[in-house]
Image (cartoon, rainbow, N blue to C red; front, side, top):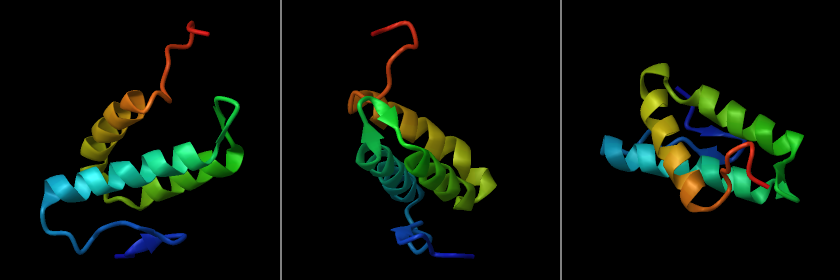
Amino acid sequence: MINEYKGYSLFNDVENKELQTRNRAVIMCNIVEQYTKKDLITPKGAGLAMGYFRCIPEAERNDVNKSFEKMIKERGYARLANQK
């Protein structure tokens, strides 16, 4: 099992699953935030976020995704498509 993706930790050594899930979601949010230009994520950022997500064990992805969705909304990066 790999421990990082392109320098981003996957927190495989963290035994507390809630903390591990939170940390992974924070990393994904940070990637999106770092690679957002003019309210759009750059292709590089999208690729990094998707690549990171694919490295998370499949059984754990749903929890990470739910946490990511909540955090990204709280940070103001997620809007409904019809909002401008």
